[in-house]
Amino acid sequence: MKYILLGIVFLFSIKSNAQNSLTELLNHYNTQSIPYIYVDELKSIQDSIILFDARERNEFEVSHIKNAKLVGSNHFTIASVTKQKLPKDTKIVVYCSLGVRSEDISEKLKSAGYTNIYNLYGGIFEWKNKDQTVVNSKGKVTEKVHVYSKHWAKWLLKGKKVY
Image (tube, rainbow, N blue to C red):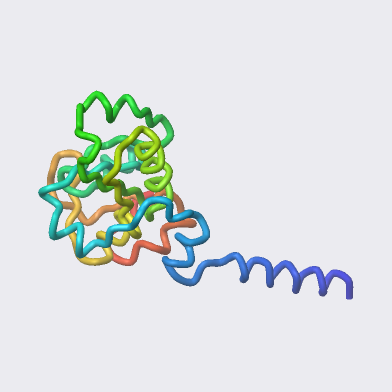
């Protein structure tokens, strides 16, 4: 009886920690210290902003949003941005797979004095899920998207998953 009760408690705790929507997932991991920008809005201003990809090189090489600059997350340094001599009020959009690592990088940019920073809601997954194109390391349109891990892969609904 004791083990059955423990099993039920364990199953309930797994269920209660699972996120059923992207909003729940992002609310769980993010503080929303950086405002979100949504795919439709980014699409309309994409050519007038700086776009930073906060994923790692292996993810970026599989695919990224056109004109994005890789800044990474594991080895990110603020110097990699400041050497670009961007005015502090430059509109910057940061993205990753879903929007968690990009919030971390955005917070570092904000701490360095950048004032016009946005986090792409749902990251490259949401971008692809909304039928937007991504390009590979050679600049060619691709259906492939690196999904970071099997755990996060469920959030990519369109395109070809790469691990």
